[in-house]
Image 1: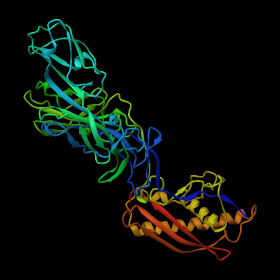
Image 2 (image 1 turned 30 degrees about the vertical axis):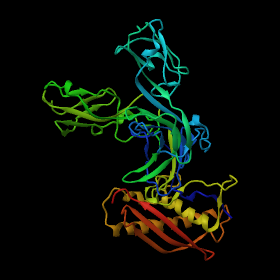
Image 3 (image 1 turned 60 degrees about the horizontal axis):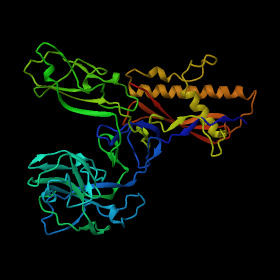
Image 4 (image 1 turned 180 degrees about the vertical axis):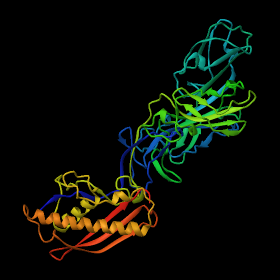
Length: 486
């Protein structure tokens, strides 16, 4: 009995470890091939990134104008409120919520007797404007004496003490503008209802900061392209510039101008795309609103060469992508594509490769399975490619590149298949001189040879035949043949 390694296996049509960066919107990844099911794996910088991942994200809501001076309760839009520890725990402590209120031109003149250079604010603790921090510095508050700003030398957020460089007179009007942290009376983490001690007026700026549970995974978007879109922004080095005005470089003579940012990148990129792959159609140039197609683009230095020189009065705009120096997130995808778009099997449904069993051992084929593999090998081999056995194979490749009638192609395929099976049978006869060939792997005849042309893609032909063994068993042979141009 003869054996052989199994060299053909069913293709899984799965695309492994395809690397990307997100597009200029900081959220979208365009895959190379269509995604045909939801069995998708995404990694960010080498770490698995769950599709339905969530995070506790800090939210800042502006409530300015919500209060009228008689109300002190409100409901946040992002309820429920969490504690910010990413443990799916609702907030239980008042310090999980911060309400920031702005006080404008608070009059503290009564604290000065002509000897002091400091005073205490009427509300505390004091906060910074943008990050709600109590680590404030003198520039975080604005003090005016008789309407004119004065220098603040020191400020204490806990006590509200503010020190000035000069000593105001007893007759001076001293005002201060600052932000302070409101006092939380009560809150309901589930509903998001919050009650504060203060009663803000309509003119006061008031903001609330808290933690809300937000989606931080990704979704599959099926449209004209195959996209994976993240819920939250990722880091990218791909930036889009819209309608950059370069009219100042136009003098009525020159045909060349330079973009503000470079290197210029193509419309579609992968992680390995280089600026030199940028074509002239990667930029959109308009002259007085009408698109103008450049003759040449120097992507490395940002030069764009027009066909004709615009007039000095023309308005010239350009839109383009460029690559900045930021280190981007590396997005790795693994997904399933369809048989017709699979780059591994080229729509054949199988790949010619060795196969391993679950224990890691090579899979061996014998009997009818080995016979079919031997037929597939001789049919797919180009005749003459084996210098030691120039007769081995078929001449099907001679049909590539010719516009031939389908009936002729079908006839030629049939002849080549039958000749290949005959040659293989002769080879088996010689093989019996050195090795046992069982009746179940010895060719007797070929029957029911059917050759059909693919209706959706005429370059593909399907060959089906029954190989009858000397043991009178049947081995079904199926092969896909593609001709690049017919």
